[in-house]
Structures are given as C-alpha cells and as structure tokens.
Image (cartoon, rainbow, N blue to C red; front, side, top):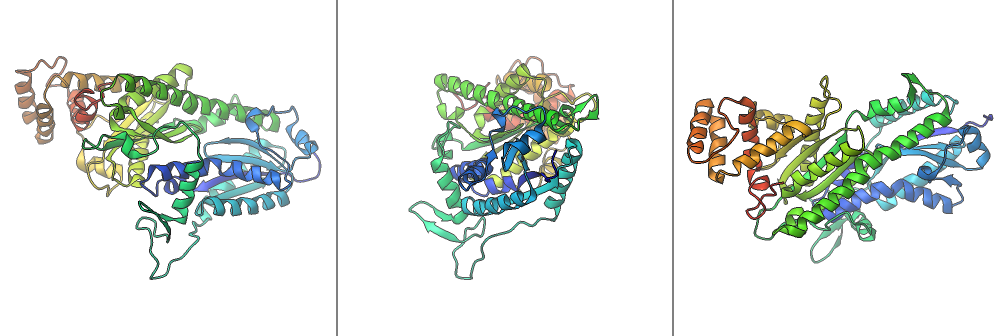
Length: 481
C-alpha cells in the first residue's frame, strides 16, 4: 500500500421511515421510498458525468487478491465496497475526494428530495479492515447522536401550510395540494416503472365495503451477529481487506436474495393465483413500499395478510437457515400511515423480543395489532391497557401460528355473534368464558376447544379481533387462508 491515505466512508440517511410515511398518499409513499433507494446511485451516476472515476457496480465486481493495491492502481477516485442494511460503504483515494463527493451528495439530496438529511462518516484506511470498520461505525454512531435534523424552509404567518408537515404549499391541483417535498415524491413516483403492486389505496378495497388495510413490516433476526460471523474465522476477526470485502459483498447479495427478492416474487405469484379464483379480487391487492437487505414493508388489503405471511416464511425457510419477525398493523385506510407504520414496527419488535430468548434465535415470529381508533400510545402501552394478559401474541410461525389459524378455522363454524360474545366473556372472567363456550358448543361442534386450556382461550381472544378479516371465508369477507 502506498503513502497516499485512502479514506473509508459510510453513508446513511436520517429518519428514513419518517420521511417516507409523512403522507397518506400511497404514490408519495412509494416515491419517497424510491428517492431513498436511488439517491446514492443517482449521485454516483452524476459524479461520473462530472469527471469522477467510480467503480459503482459492486454486485458484479470480483474482489481482487490485494484489494487496496488494486484500487490504488486502478486510477479510480472511489469504489463502492458494499450496500446493505440501509448503509453504503465506499472507499475514496483521499479525503479531498471524499469531501468533494459529499458536497455533490448534499446538493443532490436537497434537489431531489428537499428534506432528506445525510449522515456521512469516514476514517483513514490503515490496512486492517476489522479495525477500520469498527472505527467507521463508531464515528457513524457519533454523527447520528450529534447531528441535527434540518428543515430547509421557514413559513410566514400568511403562508398556507400542509397540516401534517407544516411545510408551505407550493402547488395546487383540482384534487391535491403539494409541498416541495410531496411534489418531489410524486415526481419520483411518476418516473418509476415497476411491478410493485397497486398505485393507489382505493384499488385495494371495494367501495361501500370495509376499508381495512394492513402494513406488514418484516425484518431479519440477528443480522448483526451474522455479519460478524461472516467477517471472522472461528471467532477471530479478519483484518485482510480483500477477504473481508469479498465476504461482505457475498453476504449482502445473499441476504437481499433470501429476505427480499425470492419471497417477494413468491408473494406476487401467490396473490395473483388467489386473485384468479377469488370473488373479491381486491382482497389480494398489495403494494411493496420498501424491499432491501433483510427488510421489507408492504401495504395490502387486510384479508391478504395470512397468505402473504405464509408465502414469505415458507419461501425464506425453504432456501436458507435465516429467520425473521413480522409485525402487522391493521388499520382503516384514513388512519395516518406514520403512526400505523410505527405500530407495525413495534409489533415486529415484540416478536424479536421473543426470538432473543434462549433457544428461539432461529425461529420466525409474527405479531399483529388492530388499530381500532386514533393511535395515541406505543404498542407496549396499548397492549397493557387493552389486552393485558389475554393475548397469546406473538406467534411462532411453524407452531403456534398454525395452531392459531387452525382454531380460527374451527371457530368459523360458529356465527360471528357467537365469536364476539366469546371474546366479551373472556374479558369479563373465566366463569363467563366457560358458560359462553358451553352454550356455543351445545349448538356447534367446536372440535379441539376445551374450556380448561389457557392458551386456547388466549388464541380465541386474538382470533376474535381478526375474525371478520381472516376466518369468515372469501364469500363473506375473510381470506380463510
């Protein structure tokens, strides 16, 4: 390695989810996600036109035996090492090039998104990749804690502003008013050519029928530990740049394939097949909002949730030893997306808490919450006040989730009013529950449901909250998948 001091840099965006979900318009949500996904790619593309020599196709790039020497001899100003987990890692030939690129990145972020805030961290390359990367992530954490979120505009007392973001209105049409941020998102959406599902929420529900949609957030388990394992030999960290980068690139490609590409392709196929025979085709419509690394977020008709989860986890477990947790927030289509997404993310975290317990680290968990009214608290508080110890959530996919679905199918033999009365009895106390269950079983044969099984009682409580959506059958409103 020569005396020139290369720089290792890490990029991230501040408050990504807040930026994406600051609107209830699905086109702007998709546009915001697209802006974040393409921001770095667009910047490096523009940099090439301005004279920067950048090796950006890291996925198709073979890692040479002596990476640092090869990079220095290539004449490139920068090379993308890998992209994953929402982060972009780049090596620059010197700090001056890093600073020049940051100026371009800051300007591009302002022009294309208006409010995206970039977090940039760097460290000098020493030749020990493990130590350099450790210092880089430490600097990134420091920048996150010390950095500030900026708003690039102010308003005057007579300025008309958006009620959600308090940004000034800059354009009006017959149907909508736009801030600069929302306009940039809409423009990005209009430029997208993808097959990620429906383009508006209205197409996901039938006019005059229920307007229940769902946000599904899925995230991989223990990815930090898996990245660490990928860059160590028998627990000993690998310091060699070439070997570490080769492994990280392979890990990033495999992670995206296992957690995103193949499951989403399978979900698309499953929903299209279900739609062909369904009487209510809108029940199987969806939109992919985020898909990258080990994380996906979808918005769908609430009836499609069981089929989507079944397809995702069966695809994930069939092709790898990876595991993930899913959080589902069921909501009326007029509810604020930002709040609903947080509930979905917190539901996923409930599953992760369970997966972190001894012996559960390779298991897939599912948690869900029905947002009946305005969301005024975090999920932990909502669960404590609304559900207490009555729920069996979260569910492990290969065992308790299937049991939950099976009891749902058994209860579909009862009437809707009987299931709701059973739920009310559970809330009132055991004696009421036993009496109501005996009354229902005197008229319906609910095989496998016994009055003394505490777990079954808790599952019935959970089933009642989604009974109309998942267990009534397609002709009555549910998916029954």
